[in-house]
Each structure stands twice: as structure tokens, then as C-alpha cells.
Image (cartoon, rainbow, N blue to C red; front, side, top):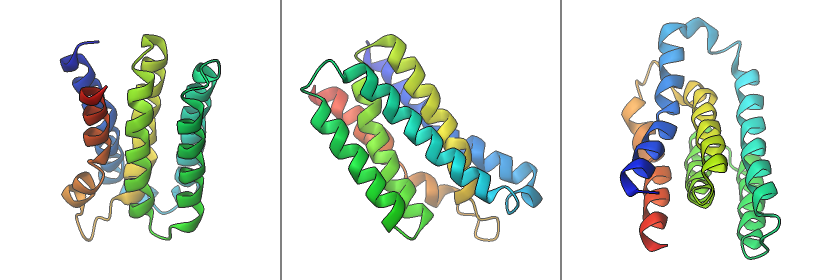
Length: 156
């Protein structure tokens, strides 16, 4: 895969956060009632991402330790980190690794990049605070996804 296609796919996947922000901007009164649903949806999409990547790399034992460690680390931060912003920062960095691993197969890459985009919808909705107007702060703190995914592309 050419780098420009890979880079644009990573940007589009990352823009799920922006779509989540736009959801809250359009209907701010729905942010509080839907908070529990967004939390469940965010965790379910993370589980789907790990499930698809694990199923694909199950036959290749070289990648399984990376996947297992990533999954354990993600579970640890999901249940130990108090701040949703901290959870999101670490989760997006791990998603950058999984995004890179999925780029070896175009079908898996399409599924994972779409799921990362969908993960951004509830994550962006949960992270946006209309009183603080923290759009740029959240974008900069979650930029680890793009940095990790593109850095790994150049190394490997």
C-alpha cells in the first residue's frame, strides 16, 4: 500500500472524533442521557477491533504476543484510569498499532479503519465539553493514533 493512501486512511479514521464532537454540537441536550450508551458502544467497538485483528493473526503466532499485550494493556487502562481523556489517549495509541497491523490485508484494513472511525463517534461525544470548548485540546492529546500508525509504517 502506498503511503499517501495509508496516511489519508489514518486521517479519515481519526476524524471520527470530529464527528463525535459535531454530534454534541448539534444536539447538546442528548449528551448526558446517552452517556452510558456511548460508554458501552465505545467498549464494544474496541472489543470488535481486537476480535477482528486477533482472528486474522491467529494463524501467525509472531503477532499474537503483541495483540495479547495490547489487549491486556487496554483492559487495564479501561478499568484503572479515572479520566476518560486519559483512557482515550492510550486507546488511540494502541489503535494506531492495530491500524498498522491491519494494513497487511486490505479487507482487514477496511474493517479496522471503519471501526476506528466508528469508535471516534462515542469517544468524541464523551470527550467534548461545551463549557470548556476543548476541541483542539482533545485532538492534540489523541494525536498519538496518527503518530503511532504512520511511524510504524516507516519503520516496517
